[in-house]
Image (cartoon, rainbow, N blue to C red):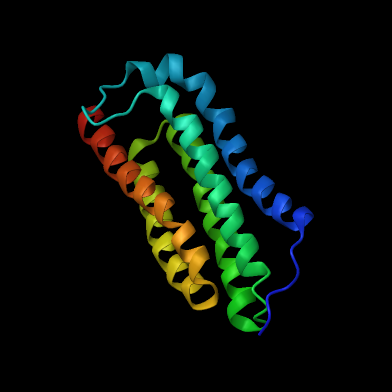
Length: 161
């Protein structure tokens, strides 16, 4: 099947949707950084705070590009629509982590949340690979970061229990 024509509006929409998930998280994160988060014992692998924002902006953009490519892959039917719905579910899980960690200050529940993010991301990559291999590859930096963030979350839980 042929890929649908390029649409800057659609691409921008997907990227903005993904970036909005980051904005939701930042609402809870910004106020907690200088207070509650500053009081936590940090693992030695914890990156500096200034690194998180730029990394997430890039990762959300890659997620948006990947979702756009799958939505425009020209492959109709259950697999494409299912992949997009699964992506939206995954994005919701992603957006929940910051409110759980920084808003509720529930590190163990945040670990469960990020583990679900990681697991659904693996599943999403396999779904995307069937529809558009480039989209699956675009999610690999995100997978690496979520894997690191999952380990980091575990260490925060361990050190601050």
